[in-house]
Structure formats: structure tokens, C-alpha cells
Image (cartoon, rainbow, N blue to C red; front, side):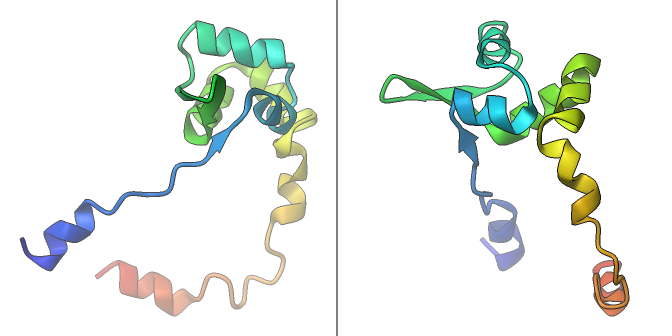
Length: 103
């Protein structure tokens, strides 16, 4: 296989959260997370008898439902988004690096 094909198969690390971590992060109750698991709205694995929920799946789920989206933005991780915005955009992202990606 050539190098370009091999790079296509590089796996991203999977971030998994417990039910309680997911509930805290998204500003909802643990019951809400467990209902989503039961309804198969989010993906998970069971490790030593405990749910480990895929973070990307949680994020997609939180964007689908207005109620969950509002709780995420008001009580969960979304309340901090404005604090994370980059104020000095002169060096981030570097405009030259953006030009190189378009080639």
C-alpha cells in the first residue's frame, strides 16, 4: 500500500464518558442519559458492567433535541463556549497554514 492509502486508515482516539460524566457535561440528569441509551439514541460500550458513552454520539444527540440543546447550552458545557472564543485572531489560526490546506 502506498503512504496516502495508509493515512486514510489512521484511527482517531475515541473519547468515552460514564453516565454521570455525560450528565454533568451536558447539563441533564443521569436518567435522561439512561433513557437515551435505552432508546438507542447514543452509542456506548459496556466496560466492567458500566456504560461508557461515545462523546461524538452524545454531541450529535444533544444537537438533535431542542430541550437537551438548551440544557447543554445553559447548564452544561455550552455555557463556557463564549469564554473559549479566541480574542486575538492575528496568530490563530495562522493564515498561511489555511492556504496550504487548500492545495
